[in-house]
Length: 233
Image (spheres, one colour):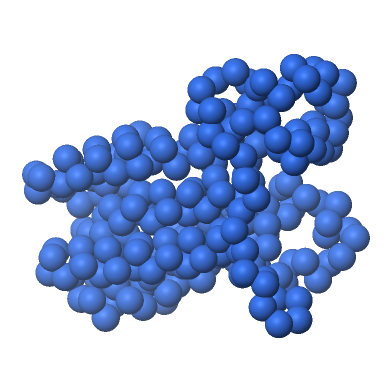
């Protein structure tokens, strides 16, 4: 099984801590941005417009990712401390980010008016969506390092090992928070098992399946709007 470890972190002065998750999210944004602009150049689109468009997409994506997460998953945090709504670097939802990014895309062209036309807009969207799995894989690696999405205990070989007491305390906390603590076996049995890490699984799926499929599909010239459809499928 995959060994359990606490995500790497660097503690700076005061209360500032840089976690591996945050570093990988920043790298994923940079990779997505660079690949998108490169695709725009390759497609003969305006790179300046692409840069401005990406600013809208990413800004709206981060806001929506945070708001969706706290309202859908942690509404009690909003009741306890409403200022959490302003802390956009905490509690993010991938699906909220995707919806927010699409809203940012729509708002950018809404402000620009009729130009560029429908096909060109789809070509810009193609460039961004093509880059998305490359960035997504890096972001999901951050989720895997942080164990943000723990699942049930398992004997599956790709599960994260519960051999250490720290790992068992970690999964017991999440079972307890879900009201399912009575479902856990005794400590000795649990030490020979693991837990599903959904962030790890999605990282592997994106890296080993989605990215290679996109690279293969890109060998042929595609109609505008092809890659958004391919990504959804």
